[in-house]
Image (tube, rainbow, N blue to C red):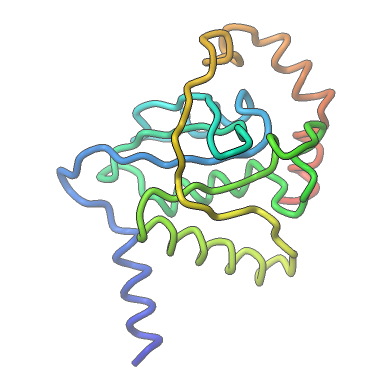
Length: 175
């Protein structure tokens, strides 16, 4: 009985709400330049903004999405595939508290979905996941020069990403 209720709850969280207003999701995955592209490619994502959140000004992205077209669990999948959830020092070549990975939930449903996805990933991969799951805090938009950096400066962006070792580490983690 309890298992049936859990399955029903997970399915309910994954079903998009028809005609629902846009929702927000906030994710920190190290350099915010590198977190914009994977979310912007998703159908149903309305906007992705780079900025800072939390008491230490963690680099993060705020994703506004249409829940009728993309679910929060799908956003979580994209998030996990673009971070190293085992690194407590930051992400890739970016070290320090401003670059650690985190999921900032906006409501109880997001919190439950984030915890469930983290726990499932930890069990599947047998990893000690250090990604924090915290209530969303005030989000401060980064300077205009940081928005869509990968589009406006593609050569510099690719150079940074390569030298940072991000793609190499992601391939090692997610092969």
